Image: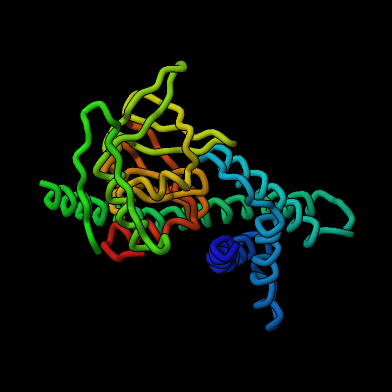
Length: 147
Length: 148
């Protein structure tokens, strides 16, 4: 559980950073004239929290294969898209502009989700490479000890 | 501690007996050492019994209530439980990497990232075995040489 929370927390901070970038890019394209107050700083955190809800509520009982984990991530991503769209657009009348914005937001969420996974994977890759180097040293040490 | 060695007839089965006041870690260590020197484990395949050298084992996996021993190209079933293997194996070479797998560190070729903070051990026979998040710190400590 501790490891799961640590992993989720790591993903949360990566998400918040990427959401900031997405808001900057999306806002500059769709509403460049928009002005905001200080409350705008809370939105990346709120979206980040919404983004980790699916990971928090999904059970981690069984050891999943890589394919199963990938499928689980896709399901969690779709849940995140649904939650964020409901949070932003829930209760608003549906028109062409709303659909267009929703599509952009959904694509952004997918890109952010993929970005979070890619960044985590690269950080893990660095750790894995260091572990492989340690492993080779360990194997040499024990082979010599036995010889 | 007094050590007695008794000669027995070739027809008799060899044995080791330990006389102790209580079974403590020191006694367990002696037992582990003797088992290691024996260096084999019994396993079954197609209802036949085999003796498998511990050093040939790639990993041992528990599936439901059964335990399977994986070699380069073969898989055998064992009647031992996974926790029994933990005490049977020489503690330097083997480590638990998930709830259901104990792996031979000498048979890992490479460690790769999997998703969600887990890792994959790529073995000499091309197989990949998952390291759970919970067991990653123990694996890191062991291969770095810190005793856990």
